[in-house]
Amino acid sequence: MWSSTWQPVGKKSTHYHVELTDAGAEFKRTEGSLSVKTKIVVSPEDDVELRRMTLIHRGRNARVIEITTYAEVVLAPAANELAHPAFNNLFIQTELIPEHEAILCHRRQREPDEQCPWLLHMMVIHGDINRETSFETDRAKFIGRGHTPASPTGVEKCRGTQ
Image 1 (cartoon, helix red, strand yellow):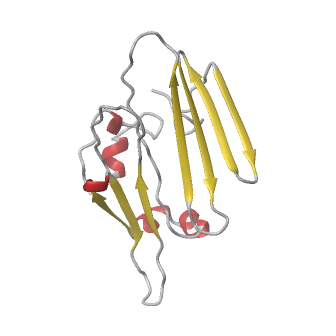
Image 2 (cartoon, rainbow, N blue to C red):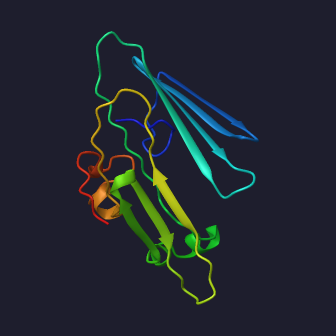
C-alpha cells in the first residue's frame, strides 16, 4: 500500500516529484509499472478544492487497482482544531449519498448565528472500469485500534458507517 502523496503513508518511491505553484500543487509518483499524478487546485473565487488523479499502467499484464480516499474533516478555523481537536470533531456530521457515491459533511452550529460550512466528497471515474464503492465515515473504525492513517484497517474493508 502506498499513497499518491507523501502523506499519509510516507513510503519512499522509485520516482516522486512535487511541484508547487500559485495555482495549486502537483504530485507525481511511480511504483513499478504504475504512475500516478495528483493535481490539486483551489478556486480563487470560491471555497472549493479540486483534486484530479491520473493513473497510467505501463505493464504488460492487467492489474486490479483499489483507490481509497481519506480526509480529516475539520470545517472550522485552524486555531479551533489545534486548541481541542476531539471537541471540534463532535460537531462534524456526515451523510452518505449512495446514488452519487458521495459523502456530505457539515459542521453543526454551536451558536444560533453561526454559519457552518459544508463539504462534499465524491469521486468521478472516467474510462472502462469495474468498480465497487464502499464508505466508512467513522474514523475509529477506518483507522482501527493500534493503527495510524499510514496503515488503516479500513482499507481492507469499509463497512458503510455514518
